[in-house]
Length: 209
Image 1 (cartoon, rainbow, N blue to C red):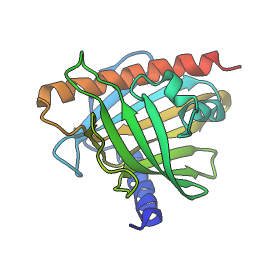
Image 2: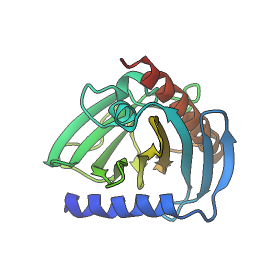
Image 3: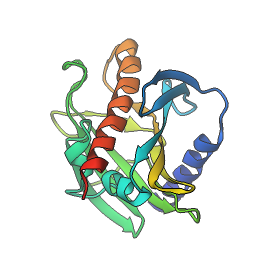
């Protein structure tokens, strides 16, 4: 499988989601974030967009978000239990397995996901992570986990002009959780978990020295 080609394609797809303002409907919001959704073109579900300002420089916010083994992300993100590196394809492209805990009061059992993830830096100082599902010979489906599939997803840490201590964070989630879950459970889970994601990230950035 050409992981580099897949990674570049998902970078373009995520950038198009960020630029395309059409069709998004607000589904949840609070002081930290506004969450939008619209039908996915990738599968029979929704793509969700979060948009909010985080108090912290883009580099600090990125330190909390970046995909790395034993990194900060697994410490604060309630939806990530474990993060494993399967292959370092290049300096900015990696294949990872992410394990998630049970959720929605146990209705959603533990999942695992295998993704190619690319890290891209833009000239304006924006840093992005871009991911989508792939198969990898070292990680067939595991007992005890339902294999889920992330369609193009990721985040953009964007500098706020004139305010170096703030970051505009765009996040995109587009996940097929797999298994036989009621649609209503899935549709209520993601907006709530994205609000929690922003809240926990804000606390994590604030706690950094």
